[in-house]
Length: 523
Image (cartoon, rainbow, N blue to C red; front, top):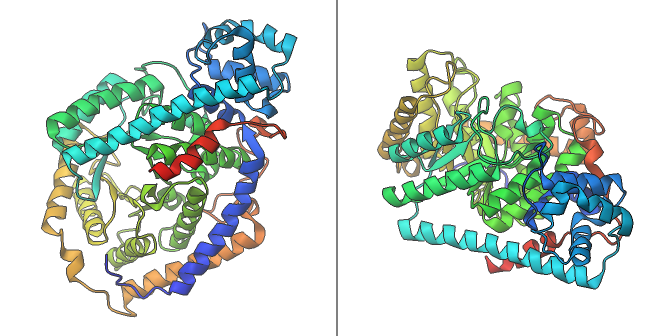
C-alpha cells in the first residue's frame, strides 16, 4: 500500500530499536529458564499421550514427578531418553508406565539423570520425526491454499463458542458456507488458568469449548471437508495462551491449525499469569508456531477494554512493536504476525471515524508485511442492534480502506447474547457488501498533510516511541509492575504459575528449539 501518512521514519526506527532491546532482556530469561509447561510440551511432541483414571495427563504426571525429584532442570527430553533406554521402549510406549505410576520407581532407582549418548540419539530421532510431521502439515496447508486459490484480504474471521465440539462443528460449517474464511473456536471460560490440557472430545464447556487435541482434530477434519465443498481453504484458529501456552501450540502444530491467539502480555495483564512464567512459555510456543507456519494473533485490542481508546492508543502501538520483536526472537516472520488492534473509540466523540482510520492506517504503514488482526466494536455496543449494524459497517469500511489482513466480524447482537448463526450471516453479508463496494477506494484517496488523520497518526506514534523509551529505561518487568500497559499493574513475583519456572542446568536439553529454529531455512 502507498504511504499516505507523514510518519517520521526516524521515530519508527527508534521505536523498533527500543522494542528490540526490551525483547533482548526477555530473551535472556527465556534462554536460561524453562517451565513445567515447556517441558510438558516437549513430552507431548515426543509422543506421550493419554490420561490416568483421575484424568491427569501423562505429560503432567511425568513432569511433576521429575520436578518433585529435582530432575526437571535437566529437561524432560533427557529423562525420557534415559527411561526409554532402560525400558527398551519408544517415547510413545513410555506413556503406559507413566500413567500407571510404574515409571516413578525407575526414576527413584536410577535417577534418569545424565546426557547419555544412546539416549540423546533416541530422543533426537523421535524429535526429528515429530518435526517432519509438522513440516508436512505446513506443506499440506500451502498445497491446499495453492489448489483452491488465495482468498482476498481482509480474511473474514468468525467465532463459534457453544461448549460442545460437535455443535461447534455444525456452526463452523454453516459459517464457512456463509462466507467465513477463518473459524475461531473460543475456549471455555477460564481454561487459560488450568495448568493442564484436558483430554478427548468435550461437550460441556461454558462460554466456549475446551481446547484439546481431539477437538482440534475433529474441527480440522470438518473444515477440510467444507473447504473441499466450498473450493477455498478455511482456516482454523484457537487460543494458545494461558498456563498451557506451549502445549497448545504443540497440539495445534500436530493437528494443522492455522491461526493461534498467542500473547504473553495478554495473559499477564488480563489473566494475572505470572510474567516470568508466561514470557518463557511464550518463547517456546512461538518457536513451534513459527515453524508450523501458524499465524499468531496478539491481544492489544484488549487494552482498549480497560483503557480509553483515544488517550491510550499509543500503548497499543507500543505493544505491537514489542510483540513484533519478541516474535522475531522466536523465528516468526512478519508474514505470520497477526498484530492486534481494535475499533473501540466512543462513537459519541466527534471525528471518531477519522481517529480510527488514522490508527488503523498507521498500523498498516508501520507493519507493512504483518497479518494485522483488526477487532470490531465491543465496548460501546449497547444492545441497539440497528446502531450496532452501523458501527460494524464503519468498522468494515476502515478495514478495507487501510488494508487489514484478518477481520474479526462484529456482531450487531454483541451486547445481547452469543451470536446465532443468523447473526453471523448478517455480519458476513455486511462485510462482503462493504468490501465489494469499497474494494479499491483506499487507493483513490489521499490524506491531507497535517490534517486530523495525519496529525493523529503522528501523535500516536510519538506517544508509543516515548512509552517504549520509558519501558526500556525501567525494563519490561518493572514497567508491568507500574501499570504502563493498559493501566493494569502486575507484580513480577505475583500471579499464577511462578512455581512452575526453573533455571536450566548446564546440561539441559530441548531438541525442538534447535531443530525448529535451524530448519526455518526450508520455508
